Image (cartoon, rainbow, N blue to C red):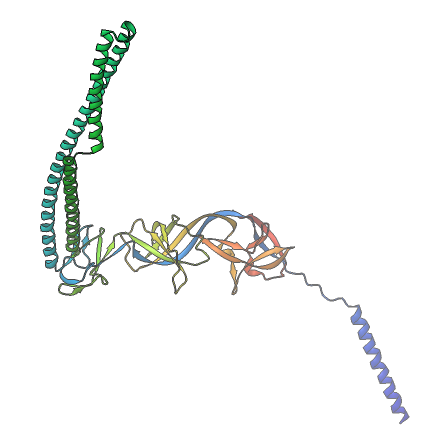
Length: 435
Protein backbone atom coordinates (compact mmCIF):
# COMPACT_ATOMS: atom_id res chain seq x y z
CA UNK A 1 0.00 0.00 0.00
CA UNK A 2 2.78 2.38 0.95
CA UNK A 3 4.78 1.35 -2.11
CA UNK A 4 1.92 2.17 -4.43
CA UNK A 5 1.58 5.60 -2.88
CA UNK A 6 5.18 6.47 -3.71
CA UNK A 7 4.72 5.26 -7.26
CA UNK A 8 1.86 7.68 -7.74
CA UNK A 9 3.94 10.57 -6.34
CA UNK A 10 6.87 9.79 -8.66
CA UNK A 11 4.62 9.60 -11.73
CA UNK A 12 2.96 12.89 -10.86
CA UNK A 13 6.33 14.64 -10.50
CA UNK A 14 7.48 13.31 -13.88
CA UNK A 15 4.31 14.57 -15.57
CA UNK A 16 4.57 18.04 -13.98
CA UNK A 17 8.22 18.26 -15.02
CA UNK A 18 7.28 17.39 -18.62
CA UNK A 19 4.53 19.97 -18.76
CA UNK A 20 6.76 22.72 -17.38
CA UNK A 21 9.53 21.83 -19.83
CA UNK A 22 7.08 21.94 -22.75
CA UNK A 23 5.81 25.34 -21.69
CA UNK A 24 9.32 26.74 -21.36
CA UNK A 25 10.34 25.32 -24.74
CA UNK A 26 7.32 26.69 -26.54
CA UNK A 27 7.85 30.15 -25.03
CA UNK A 28 11.34 30.32 -26.48
CA UNK A 29 10.25 29.27 -30.07
CA UNK A 30 9.47 32.30 -32.52
CA UNK A 31 6.43 32.16 -34.88
CA UNK A 32 7.19 32.05 -38.65
CA UNK A 33 7.20 35.46 -40.44
CA UNK A 34 4.85 35.72 -43.54
CA UNK A 35 5.62 38.58 -45.94
CA UNK A 36 2.50 40.72 -46.98
CA UNK A 37 1.77 40.51 -50.70
CA UNK A 38 2.11 43.86 -52.51
CA UNK A 39 0.16 44.38 -55.74
CA UNK A 40 1.42 46.74 -58.38
CA UNK A 41 -1.18 49.14 -59.79
CA UNK A 42 -1.37 51.92 -62.35
CA UNK A 43 -3.10 55.07 -61.13
CA UNK A 44 -4.63 58.19 -62.62
CA UNK A 45 -3.78 61.44 -60.88
CA UNK A 46 -7.03 63.41 -60.73
CA UNK A 47 -7.36 67.00 -61.84
CA UNK A 48 -10.25 69.04 -63.18
CA UNK A 49 -10.64 69.09 -66.95
CA UNK A 50 -13.06 70.66 -69.42
CA UNK A 51 -15.28 68.55 -71.63
CA UNK A 52 -18.48 68.94 -73.60
CA UNK A 53 -21.56 68.21 -71.51
CA UNK A 54 -24.59 66.51 -72.98
CA UNK A 55 -27.91 65.46 -71.55
CA UNK A 56 -29.78 62.58 -73.15
CA UNK A 57 -33.50 61.94 -73.52
CA UNK A 58 -35.82 59.53 -75.26
CA UNK A 59 -38.38 61.27 -77.43
CA UNK A 60 -41.02 60.65 -80.07
CA UNK A 61 -41.01 61.91 -83.66
CA UNK A 62 -43.90 64.26 -84.43
CA UNK A 63 -44.63 66.73 -87.23
CA UNK A 64 -43.34 70.20 -86.47
CA UNK A 65 -46.78 71.56 -87.46
CA UNK A 66 -50.21 69.96 -87.76
CA UNK A 67 -53.30 71.47 -89.36
CA UNK A 68 -56.62 70.23 -88.02
CA UNK A 69 -58.71 71.39 -90.98
CA UNK A 70 -62.19 72.25 -89.66
CA UNK A 71 -65.14 74.23 -90.99
CA UNK A 72 -66.16 77.32 -89.05
CA UNK A 73 -69.83 76.56 -89.64
CA UNK A 74 -72.12 73.54 -89.54
CA UNK A 75 -73.06 71.91 -92.83
CA UNK A 76 -73.20 68.76 -94.93
CA UNK A 77 -69.88 67.84 -96.50
CA UNK A 78 -70.20 68.27 -100.25
CA UNK A 79 -66.82 66.89 -101.25
CA UNK A 80 -63.41 65.92 -99.89
CA UNK A 81 -60.75 66.71 -102.47
CA UNK A 82 -57.76 64.84 -100.99
CA UNK A 83 -56.83 61.34 -99.89
CA UNK A 84 -54.58 60.04 -97.14
CA UNK A 85 -50.91 60.13 -98.09
CA UNK A 86 -51.43 62.89 -100.66
CA UNK A 87 -48.99 65.76 -100.84
CA UNK A 88 -50.58 69.21 -100.73
CA UNK A 89 -49.38 72.77 -101.12
CA UNK A 90 -50.42 75.80 -99.11
CA UNK A 91 -53.75 77.06 -100.45
CA UNK A 92 -54.90 73.73 -101.94
CA UNK A 93 -58.63 73.04 -101.48
CA UNK A 94 -59.14 70.20 -99.01
CA UNK A 95 -62.93 69.91 -98.60
CA UNK A 96 -66.19 71.83 -99.03
CA UNK A 97 -69.69 71.82 -97.57
CA UNK A 98 -73.03 72.67 -99.22
CA UNK A 99 -72.71 76.32 -100.30
CA UNK A 100 -76.05 77.02 -102.02
CA UNK A 101 -77.43 79.19 -99.22
CA UNK A 102 -74.12 80.99 -98.83
CA UNK A 103 -74.07 81.81 -102.56
CA UNK A 104 -77.57 83.29 -102.34
CA UNK A 105 -76.45 85.46 -99.45
CA UNK A 106 -73.52 86.70 -101.51
CA UNK A 107 -75.78 87.57 -104.46
CA UNK A 108 -78.20 89.46 -102.22
CA UNK A 109 -75.36 91.31 -100.55
CA UNK A 110 -73.92 92.27 -103.94
CA UNK A 111 -77.30 93.71 -105.08
CA UNK A 112 -77.68 95.64 -101.83
CA UNK A 113 -74.20 97.05 -102.18
CA UNK A 114 -74.92 98.11 -105.78
CA UNK A 115 -78.10 99.96 -104.71
CA UNK A 116 -76.35 101.55 -101.73
CA UNK A 117 -73.52 102.70 -103.95
CA UNK A 118 -75.98 104.30 -106.41
CA UNK A 119 -77.75 106.15 -103.60
CA UNK A 120 -74.43 107.27 -102.18
CA UNK A 121 -73.31 108.64 -105.56
CA UNK A 122 -76.59 110.51 -106.02
CA UNK A 123 -76.41 111.94 -102.53
CA UNK A 124 -72.82 113.00 -103.12
CA UNK A 125 -73.76 114.83 -106.32
CA UNK A 126 -76.67 116.60 -104.62
CA UNK A 127 -74.48 117.56 -101.67
CA UNK A 128 -71.86 118.98 -104.01
CA UNK A 129 -74.46 121.06 -105.89
CA UNK A 130 -75.98 122.44 -102.70
CA UNK A 131 -72.55 123.22 -101.35
CA UNK A 132 -71.67 125.18 -104.46
CA UNK A 133 -74.96 127.13 -104.33
CA UNK A 134 -74.34 127.98 -100.69
CA UNK A 135 -70.79 129.11 -101.39
CA UNK A 136 -71.94 131.26 -104.34
CA UNK A 137 -74.58 133.04 -102.26
CA UNK A 138 -72.22 133.45 -99.33
CA UNK A 139 -69.49 134.89 -101.53
CA UNK A 140 -71.98 137.27 -103.14
CA UNK A 141 -73.17 138.49 -99.74
CA UNK A 142 -69.60 138.88 -98.53
CA UNK A 143 -68.71 140.86 -101.62
CA UNK A 144 -71.74 143.20 -101.14
CA UNK A 145 -70.75 143.82 -97.54
CA UNK A 146 -67.21 144.55 -98.62
CA UNK A 147 -68.49 147.08 -101.19
CA UNK A 148 -70.38 148.92 -98.44
CA UNK A 149 -67.31 148.89 -96.19
CA UNK A 150 -65.05 150.26 -98.92
CA UNK A 151 -67.64 152.90 -99.86
CA UNK A 152 -67.86 154.05 -96.25
CA UNK A 153 -64.08 154.21 -95.91
CA UNK A 154 -63.75 156.13 -99.18
CA UNK A 155 -66.43 158.70 -98.21
CA UNK A 156 -64.91 159.06 -94.76
CA UNK A 157 -61.56 159.83 -96.33
CA UNK A 158 -63.17 162.46 -98.63
CA UNK A 159 -64.92 163.98 -95.60
CA UNK A 160 -61.62 164.14 -93.72
CA UNK A 161 -59.99 165.91 -96.68
CA UNK A 162 -62.87 168.42 -96.88
CA UNK A 163 -62.53 169.15 -93.19
CA UNK A 164 -58.81 169.78 -93.59
CA UNK A 165 -59.49 172.17 -96.47
CA UNK A 166 -61.96 174.07 -94.31
CA UNK A 167 -59.33 174.35 -91.57
CA UNK A 168 -56.76 175.61 -94.08
CA UNK A 169 -59.14 178.26 -95.52
CA UNK A 170 -60.14 179.33 -92.05
CA UNK A 171 -56.52 179.90 -91.12
CA UNK A 172 -55.68 181.69 -94.37
CA UNK A 173 -58.76 183.81 -95.01
CA UNK A 174 -60.34 184.04 -91.57
CA UNK A 175 -63.71 183.13 -90.17
CA UNK A 176 -66.65 184.47 -92.15
CA UNK A 177 -64.61 184.79 -95.34
CA UNK A 178 -66.13 183.64 -98.60
CA UNK A 179 -63.52 180.89 -98.98
CA UNK A 180 -63.99 179.57 -95.41
CA UNK A 181 -67.79 179.55 -95.78
CA UNK A 182 -67.57 177.62 -99.08
CA UNK A 183 -65.15 175.04 -97.55
CA UNK A 184 -67.42 174.56 -94.54
CA UNK A 185 -70.45 173.88 -96.78
CA UNK A 186 -68.39 171.36 -98.79
CA UNK A 187 -67.23 169.62 -95.62
CA UNK A 188 -70.79 169.31 -94.28
CA UNK A 189 -71.94 167.67 -97.53
CA UNK A 190 -69.04 165.20 -97.57
CA UNK A 191 -69.41 164.36 -93.89
CA UNK A 192 -73.13 163.72 -94.31
CA UNK A 193 -72.36 161.32 -97.16
CA UNK A 194 -69.76 159.49 -94.98
CA UNK A 195 -72.19 159.22 -92.08
CA UNK A 196 -74.86 157.80 -94.37
CA UNK A 197 -72.41 155.24 -95.86
CA UNK A 198 -71.30 154.13 -92.38
CA UNK A 199 -74.91 153.79 -91.25
CA UNK A 200 -75.68 151.60 -94.25
CA UNK A 201 -72.60 149.42 -93.60
CA UNK A 202 -73.34 149.12 -89.87
CA UNK A 203 -76.93 148.15 -90.61
CA UNK A 204 -75.80 145.44 -93.00
CA UNK A 205 -73.39 144.05 -90.39
CA UNK A 206 -76.06 144.19 -87.71
CA UNK A 207 -78.50 142.29 -89.90
CA UNK A 208 -76.01 139.38 -90.05
CA UNK A 209 -75.96 136.74 -92.77
CA UNK A 210 -78.58 137.33 -95.42
CA UNK A 211 -81.61 135.04 -95.35
CA UNK A 212 -80.91 133.57 -98.76
CA UNK A 213 -77.43 132.55 -97.57
CA UNK A 214 -78.88 130.88 -94.48
CA UNK A 215 -81.44 129.05 -96.61
CA UNK A 216 -78.69 127.86 -98.97
CA UNK A 217 -76.58 126.69 -96.01
CA UNK A 218 -79.54 124.78 -94.55
CA UNK A 219 -80.09 123.04 -97.89
CA UNK A 220 -76.38 122.16 -98.01
CA UNK A 221 -76.40 120.76 -94.45
CA UNK A 222 -79.46 118.67 -95.27
CA UNK A 223 -77.79 117.33 -98.41
CA UNK A 224 -74.62 116.54 -96.41
CA UNK A 225 -76.68 114.65 -93.81
CA UNK A 226 -78.33 112.68 -96.61
CA UNK A 227 -74.93 111.83 -98.03
CA UNK A 228 -73.62 110.74 -94.61
CA UNK A 229 -76.66 108.47 -94.20
CA UNK A 230 -76.23 107.05 -97.70
CA UNK A 231 -72.51 106.50 -97.05
CA UNK A 232 -73.31 104.71 -93.78
CA UNK A 233 -75.73 102.43 -95.66
CA UNK A 234 -73.06 101.80 -98.26
CA UNK A 235 -70.57 100.82 -95.52
CA UNK A 236 -73.13 98.47 -93.97
CA UNK A 237 -73.84 96.90 -97.36
CA UNK A 238 -70.12 96.52 -98.02
CA UNK A 239 -69.59 94.83 -94.64
CA UNK A 240 -72.56 92.55 -95.32
CA UNK A 241 -70.96 91.51 -98.60
CA UNK A 242 -67.67 90.82 -96.81
CA UNK A 243 -69.53 88.77 -94.23
CA UNK A 244 -71.40 86.87 -96.97
CA UNK A 245 -68.14 86.19 -98.82
CA UNK A 246 -66.55 84.97 -95.60
CA UNK A 247 -69.52 82.66 -95.07
CA UNK A 248 -69.07 81.37 -98.60
CA UNK A 249 -65.36 80.99 -98.00
CA UNK A 250 -66.07 79.13 -94.76
CA UNK A 251 -67.78 76.43 -96.80
CA UNK A 252 -64.31 75.49 -98.04
CA UNK A 253 -61.16 74.62 -96.14
CA UNK A 254 -57.68 74.99 -97.58
CA UNK A 255 -54.24 73.69 -96.71
CA UNK A 256 -52.47 76.23 -94.48
CA UNK A 257 -49.02 74.86 -95.37
CA UNK A 258 -47.13 72.52 -97.64
CA UNK A 259 -47.41 69.02 -96.23
CA UNK A 260 -48.86 65.55 -96.24
CA UNK A 261 -52.44 64.43 -95.64
CA UNK A 262 -52.12 61.99 -92.75
CA UNK A 263 -55.81 61.50 -92.00
CA UNK A 264 -59.16 61.99 -93.75
CA UNK A 265 -61.61 62.04 -90.86
CA UNK A 266 -64.93 62.70 -92.62
CA UNK A 267 -66.39 61.95 -96.04
CA UNK A 268 -68.97 63.39 -98.43
CA UNK A 269 -72.51 63.45 -97.09
CA UNK A 270 -71.45 63.55 -93.43
CA UNK A 271 -72.14 66.43 -91.08
CA UNK A 272 -69.29 68.85 -90.51
CA UNK A 273 -69.00 70.93 -87.34
CA UNK A 274 -66.40 73.38 -86.01
CA UNK A 275 -65.56 70.87 -83.28
CA UNK A 276 -64.28 68.06 -85.52
CA UNK A 277 -61.54 68.16 -88.18
CA UNK A 278 -62.35 66.87 -91.65
CA UNK A 279 -58.77 66.47 -92.81
CA UNK A 280 -55.47 66.41 -90.87
CA UNK A 281 -52.35 67.71 -92.62
CA UNK A 282 -48.83 67.43 -91.23
CA UNK A 283 -45.84 69.51 -92.21
CA UNK A 284 -42.98 67.80 -93.98
CA UNK A 285 -40.57 68.96 -91.31
CA UNK A 286 -40.43 66.71 -88.28
CA UNK A 287 -39.36 67.31 -84.70
CA UNK A 288 -38.49 65.20 -81.68
CA UNK A 289 -40.64 65.76 -78.61
CA UNK A 290 -39.05 65.11 -75.21
CA UNK A 291 -40.01 65.62 -71.57
CA UNK A 292 -37.70 67.78 -69.43
CA UNK A 293 -37.64 67.25 -65.69
CA UNK A 294 -38.13 70.12 -63.27
CA UNK A 295 -34.47 69.86 -62.25
CA UNK A 296 -33.35 70.54 -65.84
CA UNK A 297 -35.96 73.05 -66.99
CA UNK A 298 -33.65 75.99 -66.27
CA UNK A 299 -30.69 74.28 -67.94
CA UNK A 300 -32.24 73.40 -71.29
CA UNK A 301 -32.59 76.53 -73.44
CA UNK A 302 -34.19 77.35 -76.76
CA UNK A 303 -31.47 77.43 -79.43
CA UNK A 304 -29.26 74.69 -77.96
CA UNK A 305 -28.02 72.23 -80.56
CA UNK A 306 -28.94 68.56 -80.38
CA UNK A 307 -28.18 65.24 -82.00
CA UNK A 308 -31.21 63.09 -82.77
CA UNK A 309 -30.78 59.36 -83.37
CA UNK A 310 -33.52 57.36 -85.10
CA UNK A 311 -32.95 53.77 -86.18
CA UNK A 312 -29.19 54.22 -85.59
CA UNK A 313 -29.10 57.17 -87.99
CA UNK A 314 -27.99 60.51 -86.58
CA UNK A 315 -29.57 63.87 -87.43
CA UNK A 316 -28.91 67.32 -86.09
CA UNK A 317 -31.22 70.09 -84.97
CA UNK A 318 -32.01 72.65 -82.29
CA UNK A 319 -34.38 73.11 -79.37
CA UNK A 320 -36.97 75.54 -80.75
CA UNK A 321 -39.74 75.49 -78.15
CA UNK A 322 -40.17 74.60 -74.46
CA UNK A 323 -43.58 74.41 -72.78
CA UNK A 324 -44.20 76.86 -69.95
CA UNK A 325 -46.56 74.53 -68.08
CA UNK A 326 -45.66 70.93 -67.12
CA UNK A 327 -47.69 67.92 -68.17
CA UNK A 328 -50.34 67.19 -65.55
CA UNK A 329 -49.46 63.47 -65.45
CA UNK A 330 -45.69 63.22 -65.91
CA UNK A 331 -44.93 66.68 -64.44
CA UNK A 332 -42.33 67.15 -67.17
CA UNK A 333 -42.09 70.07 -69.58
CA UNK A 334 -42.48 69.23 -73.25
CA UNK A 335 -39.59 70.42 -75.41
CA UNK A 336 -39.52 70.37 -79.20
CA UNK A 337 -36.31 69.71 -81.14
CA UNK A 338 -36.14 70.43 -84.86
CA UNK A 339 -34.59 67.91 -87.25
CA UNK A 340 -32.53 69.43 -90.07
CA UNK A 341 -32.73 66.45 -92.43
CA UNK A 342 -36.09 64.79 -91.80
CA UNK A 343 -36.64 62.78 -94.99
CA UNK A 344 -35.98 59.38 -93.38
CA UNK A 345 -37.94 59.72 -90.14
CA UNK A 346 -41.56 58.79 -89.59
CA UNK A 347 -44.26 60.00 -87.24
CA UNK A 348 -44.34 58.04 -83.99
CA UNK A 349 -40.80 56.63 -84.15
CA UNK A 350 -38.68 56.64 -80.99
CA UNK A 351 -35.70 58.95 -81.03
CA UNK A 352 -32.67 59.41 -78.83
CA UNK A 353 -32.01 63.09 -78.25
CA UNK A 354 -28.66 64.35 -76.97
CA UNK A 355 -28.64 68.08 -76.17
CA UNK A 356 -25.34 69.95 -76.08
CA UNK A 357 -25.14 71.99 -72.86
CA UNK A 358 -21.72 73.42 -73.72
CA UNK A 359 -18.41 72.84 -71.98
CA UNK A 360 -18.29 71.86 -68.30
CA UNK A 361 -15.31 71.91 -65.96
CA UNK A 362 -15.04 69.04 -63.49
CA UNK A 363 -13.58 65.60 -62.87
CA UNK A 364 -14.13 63.51 -66.00
CA UNK A 365 -13.24 59.80 -65.96
CA UNK A 366 -13.34 57.01 -68.51
CA UNK A 367 -16.40 54.84 -68.02
CA UNK A 368 -14.32 51.69 -67.63
CA UNK A 369 -12.67 53.25 -64.59
CA UNK A 370 -15.95 53.11 -62.65
CA UNK A 371 -16.69 49.92 -60.68
CA UNK A 372 -20.10 48.86 -59.42
CA UNK A 373 -21.30 46.49 -56.74
CA UNK A 374 -24.76 47.96 -56.50
CA UNK A 375 -23.34 51.46 -56.26
CA UNK A 376 -20.72 53.26 -58.32
CA UNK A 377 -17.21 53.53 -56.84
CA UNK A 378 -13.50 53.64 -57.63
CA UNK A 379 -10.40 52.48 -55.81
CA UNK A 380 -7.91 55.14 -54.78
CA UNK A 381 -4.48 54.79 -53.17
CA UNK A 382 -3.83 56.49 -49.85
CA UNK A 383 -0.56 55.75 -48.00
CA UNK A 384 0.08 52.71 -50.23
CA UNK A 385 -3.26 51.19 -49.26
CA UNK A 386 -6.43 50.67 -51.30
CA UNK A 387 -9.42 52.80 -50.26
CA UNK A 388 -12.90 52.45 -51.74
CA UNK A 389 -14.43 55.79 -52.72
CA UNK A 390 -18.10 56.17 -53.73
CA UNK A 391 -18.76 58.41 -56.73
CA UNK A 392 -21.84 59.84 -58.42
CA UNK A 393 -22.14 59.92 -62.18
CA UNK A 394 -23.58 62.86 -64.08
CA UNK A 395 -23.20 63.57 -67.80
CA UNK A 396 -21.79 60.97 -70.17
CA UNK A 397 -19.98 62.16 -73.30
CA UNK A 398 -18.86 59.25 -75.45
CA UNK A 399 -16.71 57.19 -73.06
CA UNK A 400 -16.18 60.01 -70.56
CA UNK A 401 -18.38 60.60 -67.52
CA UNK A 402 -18.58 63.63 -65.24
CA UNK A 403 -18.25 62.50 -61.60
CA UNK A 404 -18.56 63.87 -58.09
CA UNK A 405 -16.96 62.40 -54.97
CA UNK A 406 -13.32 62.78 -55.97
CA UNK A 407 -10.85 65.58 -55.33
CA UNK A 408 -8.01 66.95 -57.36
CA UNK A 409 -4.84 65.02 -56.56
CA UNK A 410 -6.59 61.70 -55.75
CA UNK A 411 -4.86 58.62 -57.17
CA UNK A 412 -7.47 56.46 -58.89
CA UNK A 413 -6.54 52.87 -59.76
CA UNK A 414 -7.02 52.31 -63.49
CA UNK A 415 -5.10 49.04 -63.87
CA UNK A 416 -4.88 46.21 -61.38
CA UNK A 417 -7.95 47.32 -59.48
CA UNK A 418 -9.83 44.07 -59.97
CA UNK A 419 -7.09 42.19 -58.14
CA UNK A 420 -7.31 44.25 -54.94
CA UNK A 421 -9.76 45.10 -52.21
CA UNK A 422 -9.97 47.83 -49.56
CA UNK A 423 -6.99 47.79 -47.16
CA UNK A 424 -4.67 45.87 -49.43
CA UNK A 425 -1.16 47.24 -49.71
CA UNK A 426 -0.13 48.26 -53.21
CA UNK A 427 2.79 49.72 -55.05
CA UNK A 428 2.20 52.40 -57.63
CA UNK A 429 3.92 51.22 -60.78
CA UNK A 430 2.88 54.14 -63.00
CA UNK A 431 1.16 57.50 -62.60
CA UNK A 432 -0.69 59.19 -65.46
CA UNK A 433 -2.55 62.50 -65.48
CA UNK A 434 -6.10 62.72 -66.75
CA UNK A 435 -6.51 65.03 -69.72
